[in-house]
Every structure is written in structure tokens, then in C-alpha cells.
Image (cartoon, rainbow, N blue to C red):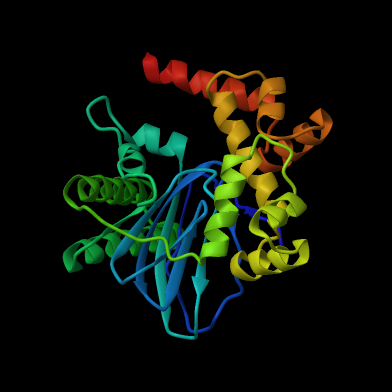
Length: 285
């Protein structure tokens, strides 16, 4: 599997993962959910939207919908993390006029999608996640209220951290990978191809394809398609027509764009644009 995998979320999903094996590199996105992830242990590199970072225990990552990301295990060191995925509509229902719980996902500077928790904050986050998992499994009386309370407390913690904690991470991607992503980002609307990227980098097409696949677990062309869908979604939410979003995001075939978008987003571009418009109106009311 060399595609960027799409993992939709139904309302929310909480997991406490622990393993001692090295995983193959893969990239994925959540087309309808935000993700918080507390990293506890392991020898891990964290990839998001073209940049790679080394994580340390206590790092909390913030991942908006449609961000292409993945975790690269480098050896068999004990690996523990606690991801929490939450649909936007679910977070909005927990928010109030005074407290926008989505704010934390847009509080960090570009390229710094993480903050560091102290021991007390880590314990608080872990306790809430474990309570969510236990409650969803046992479904005791009042479990739904307990789950909502825990998710709310985690989001409040995440928002408080972004206001008081200035994190800093450096992109550790190899230069050839950074140059590849820069070329893609700079030419996303153009008629780019694996061959044009290879020519720009003064490498053969087979060589850059191999390097990219080995580093990300995803083929270079499939990554380009995923990035174009990302960009088309942004254009649609900004009010562009479906036709404009298609060609501005680099697709040359309208029918192919519609089919690819539907597969990625779970709905047509027109429906996606309407949902964005409805959400904007709701926010203004």
C-alpha cells in the first residue's frame, strides 16, 4: 500500500497504544477530524505536511483535518502514545460562546504543530484518555457524560498549553526530501510530474521515486494527488467554484478530479463547498 490512507472518524476515537516493534512507514489523513497525540516513549520521528520532527516524551501534537501525517519508528524501542481523534462538529458542541475549544489547533506557528507537557499535565491527559477508553468499553451508567467531560477537559488542557508553552521543533528531513516538498508546494497548480521533479533535483525519476517512497512509505505521485485534494478543499471553503478548484489545484481532467475528491472526502466537491458555507454561516450566527 503506497497511498496516503484516509481514516474517517465517527465522532471521536481514543487509543492508548504500546508496542515494541518497528512499523513500516505510512502516511495518512483524517478528512473529518482533529487529532491530539501525547507521545510518551520510543525512538520516533513525526511527519506532518512535508516536515519531519524528532519527538521527546511529553510532546503533544496538534493535527487539523486533512493534514498528511505519520509516525516513523526508527527501531524496536518501547513505543507508547495516546492519540485522540475528534470530529469538528463534536468539538463545536462542547464549545461555548466564551470558549472555542478548536482554538488550540490554530494557535501554533506554521511548522510547529506541537507543545510539551510537564509530568502533571501528562498524567492528566493520560487519565482522561484511559477513562474514555474504559467507559466506552464498559458503558456503565452515565458513561456518555463521563466521556464528554473527559474530552472537554483534554481540550481545555490543550488550549491552556498553547497559551503558556512555546515549543520549538526543527525540520530534520533530508535535504532532497525538503527540496522535493518545496517544489511540489511551489508548483502545485502547474503541470508537475515525477519527471519534472526529478529534472529539477538533477536526479533520475526512478531515483527520486525510490528515495521518496523509502522515506515516507508513500509513492511520490500519490502524495502529489493528496496534496492537490488538500488544496482544492481550501479553495472550495474560500468560495471557489468546483471548476476553479479543479484546475487551480493542478487537475487537468474534471471527471478525474470529481472521482478522486469523492474518494478522499467522502462527498462531492459541491457538497463539500456547501458544508463549508453552512459551517461559516453557523459560526456567524
